Image (cartoon, rainbow, N blue to C red; front, side, top):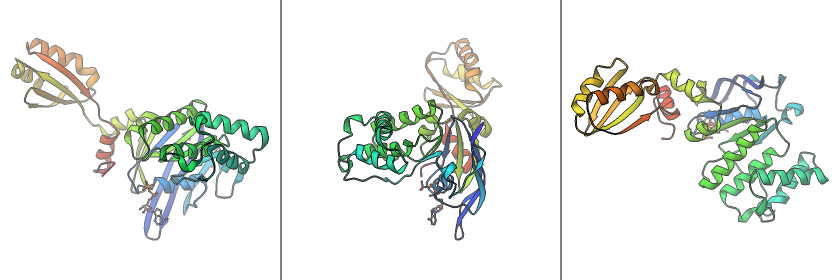
Length: 311
Ligand SMILES: Nc1ncnc2c1ncn2[C@@H]1O[C@H](COP(=O)(O)OP(=O)(O)OP(=O)(O)O)[C@@H](O)[C@H]1O
């Protein structure tokens, strides 16, 4: 069942339409990614959902309840991690968490216990007593995410949380989000990194120019746009014979040759690979290597919008 239902959200800044009729839902325990380039409308969409920005039109429901800027009941179910850091640099990590825990109405043993749990989740227990001003960008990001998790949200919303951080922090961030999802939290995640969407998200909405262009699981998106798979064969002696035979196969849409490398364009390479290898063997060509390349979300984005995710 859907925890978040978003319908026809629109928002303009003057004559600039930032978000146009955006709609999607997130089930309980599901991780949903909004994947799109800078300026696509991701931040505007999630700021409306987080209740910090008002839409011009459209609706947001949390667990069936109408959600708006002033609905405390639905707001209490959301943890929002904006792009900007909202931390006190002169306080240590523990005091930062305790400060925000009090804002959420936690105190005493409950606050201490939750802050201890959060430090474990974001892997900063060892650094709890160090001032945030001494933290790397990645550590500060992790603490910022920890603040967003303090109130045990049922819906955790994160705006590009892993941008510009080192590989170790990125990994820690993605793992902490995966752990939340495994605990049943619904996650809304924005990114312009295909790899993050592929690793984290059960379903992805591809957003560009304020509109959701397509959505689904990674496999669904790839099959929606009908991109071909590629099989790359490296062949020694007998290559020309093999190429002639491969061109005869009805499953193969295109064959191109460059040096010893033969590239085949076709649908669903995994189901055809055995047949391809049979043909190569029958033509007595020497097979040095074989590689299957499936289209990724970057290819889907390019197909849908005519441009790259990062330009
Ligand atoms: N406060 C604002 N005033 C005017 N225009 C804005 C404002 N905030 C966003 N925009 C515009 O709305 C559009 C969508 O921006 P938004 O920040 O939602 O995109 P985004 O996908 O989150 O990109 P980014 O990752 O760069 O934040 C852009 O054209 C942006 O310039």
